[in-house]
Length: 258
Image 1 (cartoon, helix red, strand yellow):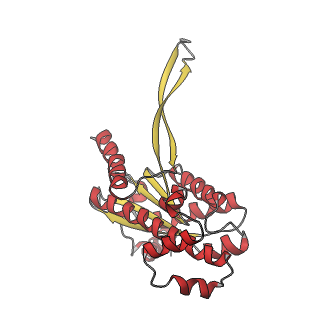
Image 2 (cartoon, one colour):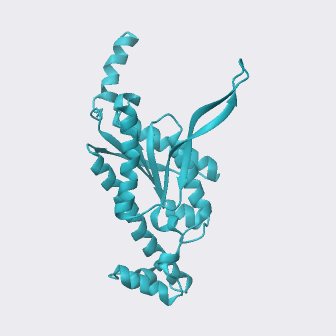
Image 3 (cartoon, one colour):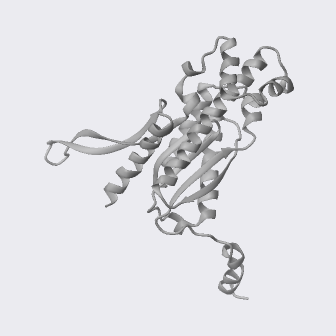
């Protein structure tokens, strides 16, 4: 059998299940760290419940994903997860889902591992969202998930540091409401509202334009060029205000493309 015939015969088994995202749909990629509880608490022993070193690793990895060839409008990271909003006009890989999932997961795993100096792995899944409102709802979901997780994590690790084992601390938190968890922390002198916002709301990353002064090499005249760079926001708003913030980022992009 000639190579071309063999190639055509076998490639069907690779591509037969290919799914492509429909034109103009928003894609949001969500990446999650695999076995990161063991990595952060046993292998690397980061401070619990939050460690600025780990936060900075996640932010740096997110920045790498924004500059590795994908048209990312907005990125968000909380705990061991990263969400990337891709431009609805993104055409890389012919919008094949398996290529986005595998490439983004591989890129995140490689970048994080290099920065940490330890092997680490991410998985990836894509949400296909037809409207701006669903994009806003997605990021509000992750933003509010960050707040819920932060409150539970602070309660759990406060109890652990007070001498309780895993089972005791977990049992104490079962069935507790948000107000009861806040009260538990207050008994230890911790006001949840006073904790750093990045712990409770995550970190947002987006592009900001700026003017860069330079000199024309031919005319020697001073010129101003418009450039853009990534801005990291550790003080995100919440709920409706956060929804308006995400909506404004998408709207800016749509106006530029109009």
